Length: 117
Length: 110
Image (tube, rainbow over all chains, first blue to last red; front, top):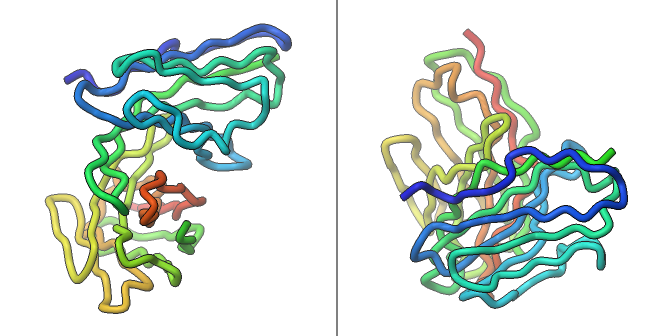
C-alpha cells in the first residue's frame, strides 16, 4: 500500500481565499483523522471520522473550517476564508479501530504545509 | 481523556540506552498506552503499544508497572537518527481518538 496520501504537499495562498486539502486513507482502514501542527500549539486533532461519519469535530477551530468524507477512500478539509493564523502543517491519518480503548495504530500522511499570506 | 505528562526534552550520547517516562495517573481500565515518534517535516510514526507489564519489538521496549499510572519507553543504544520528538498517548475507554501532548524532544549527540 502507498500509505496515506495527501495533496497538495505545499500550499501558499492569500488571506481570504478558499483552501481545500485532500486525503486518501489506507485501504481497509475505518477511521480518519485530521490534525494541525504548529510550533506554538503542537499537534491538535481537528476532526475524526469513523466509517465515513464525523464522530468528533470539537477540535475544528471555527466555522471557517469544514471537513467531509464522501466515501471510505477520500476526505477533504476546507478553509474558507483562510487567514494568516491558519498557517500550519495539516496531517491526515487513518487507522483500523477494533476495540474500545484502543484507537488503533494511526498511519500519518506526509502533511500539507499551508502558508496564508 | 486520560492526561499524560512527560519531560519536555532529553539529551543522550550515541550508544546509550534512553528511557523516557510518561505519567498517566487517571488511566482507565480499558485504556492502552501508545508511543509515537516524529522526525522534522514528517508525520508521527507508531513505535509501540501496550496494556500492562512489558512489550518489546524491534525498535523499543515499553515497561508498564502494575498500577499502570506510568510507562517507560526504552530505546536501546540510540543513534543520531533517533533524534526526534516522542509522544506518549493513552487511549480513551469511550473509543475517542488519542490526544497528542507536547511530547519529549530527544537529542542524540555524537
